[in-house]
Image (cartoon, rainbow, N blue to C red; front, side, top):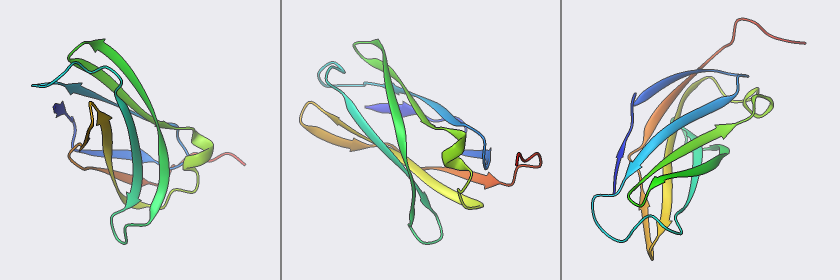
Length: 114
């Protein structure tokens, strides 16, 4: 299984809705049926779990799927400033595979609501 990740480091404003779409392509093996996935965001500085991300799998074909990672803005309001690490772990056809890790740089939002 191969996956494209662009960009490898994202900038995200704390308190915004988080959504990142990844494309997964199968290079060999059985079709992408019964694919399941989980993802977490962890602080780079101490490995503390910040969030369990929602994962929406959207099949494109038997060999390709879109993976949408998300969290609503109310959940990201308390995300720490700094670097978060994220990867996606897939369970498929008796295998468990993880993507490469990517970074999310969390910065402060200038406009804030009371």
